Length: 479
Image 1 (cartoon, rainbow, N blue to C red):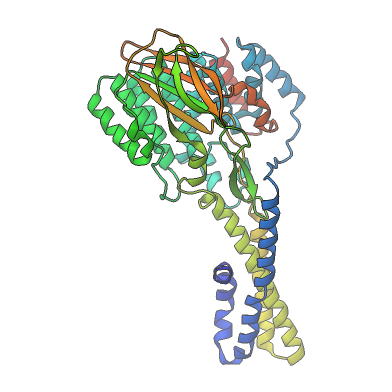
Image 2: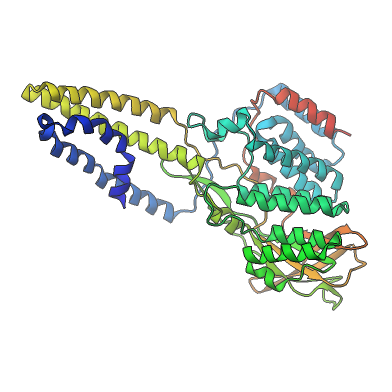
């Protein structure tokens, strides 16, 4: 496998020399060229084996690029902006939003939306998730930022954050929850359908459309809107993506969602940090068992749960990663260009050496062509930036547990019974939706605001739109 891969990688050098080597006068160099092509195989194999062994011995670390210092005037303006926010707990997130500007706006709006939802601030969650979803959907438009993301000549880390498919799907999921919280089940259904679509937007298709939570939520919203036939259709889609939903009824008025653990974190692997990979957190993940009006009572709205979503699975098995799409294309191109530079330069050296020792002018020509190709390919390799984008939405859970019930509850919150490696505990799920037709309770094992330290260094914005962006958020978010 390594040998075939090597020859594909170095095809540029082979094509470059094929015409010259095919002539009878150059037959003597055929063996020389063959040896040259095969010579790097052993060191490459040794390097790959050593790297794999080193990575296997230690837990992968996130290596953030050094962040530039925040200009004092920007820091002061951000503090003033954040102080005008009514929620004291959310002010650090607003300060970060202001400082980082447009490049990380989608990610920071997602963080604000999640935190606001957990605090019961539905109006702010609506504004934040609207802003995030709008930016996510712009990635497929014909605009300069979308073109930068596809360019071989632009470092991946400098593009505006839009997230991986599972992150984009979850942004639409939470926006759908906010619509449901306001009793708008038709728009909630539309957002859950969009969440399902975002999961399919990947370069490969093997695992596309397997996020069963999203069609199930679209089905439940349809039931709450009075359309039981559509609800059953969506349930069948959910079962097709995830067999766990075969034991869940969608036509019930009470829905409890409990999120546990943390989704895996991103890191850059490979010799250039170009391969985007994920590593699970070493945290116990609670299993939800039941949801009752109080701990230890038999008055339970939901008697059992199923695992409705495994975000680690979604992160690591969706259709195009790790990294076979645009990002991996850039990293592969860098390795390929570097290989062509090495081989072509070596061919040039050998050709010139042969010319010096034999007086063969054709050999000298091969040498000049090889050296020229080597310089061009080396320039391409150096110009390509291949660092993987490891920014992630650190608030996302590892697992989402789903349970439904037939009887609505008068309680504003439910006590969710959990089992964590044999240890029993209780946590709260708050009521987000309370309409004549349906109720939805939502809870988490980790508060979003408790994870701020995991967000990575603050990166001062350098986007040309930042001045306009800051004026917009001051006008739209300050009460």
